[in-house]
Length: 185
Image 1 (cartoon, rainbow, N blue to C red):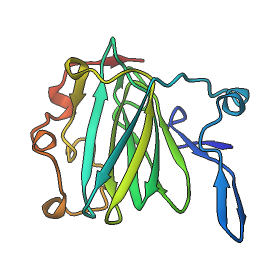
Image 2: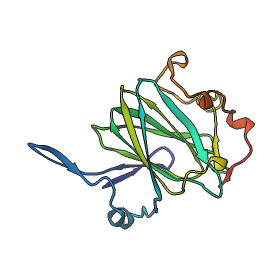
Image 3: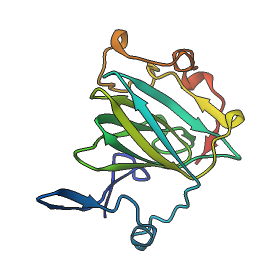
Image 4: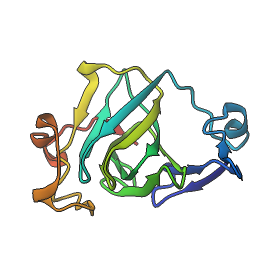
C-alpha cells in the first residue's frame, strides 16, 4: 500500500495495490500489519456505508467531539467523490485549511482523516457508494458540523450552490467562526 501525505501532512491518501488479470482485479483495501509497518496504526471500531443517488450530493461537513472523536478511512466503492478534510484544531498551523482528493471505484484510493478535522464529500457520479472505517463509535451527542459553503473556508466544491443536494440538517449548520473550539493542536 502506498501512503502519500496531502496538503495537510496528517491527511493521507492511501492507495492499495491492485493485481489485475483477465477476470478483473484483486486488492487488499485494509491490512493492519502492512500499514502499521509504514507508521499508520489506527484501530477501527465501526464501518459505515452511504449511498447517494444524484451527482452533486454533499454530505458534510461533520465531526465528532470528545469523548467520541473519530478518525475516518474513506473509500468510494461505486462512482466517484471529491472528499475533503478541514483542519479545525485551534492553534494548528493549518487551522481552517483543507486537503482534498478524488476517490473513485476506478482509482481505489482512500483518504485518512484524523480526529480534529471536519469531513465532507460531494458525489461526482450518480449512484455513488462510500464506505468508511471509524476509530470511535457514532454518538449523536458528540456529533458536530459546519455549513458546507462557509465563506471563510472557501472550499472549491465541484457543484454550484443551487445544484447541491443536501440533507435538511446540513443546510442549517453554523459557520466555523460561530462554533466553539472543539479541538486544540
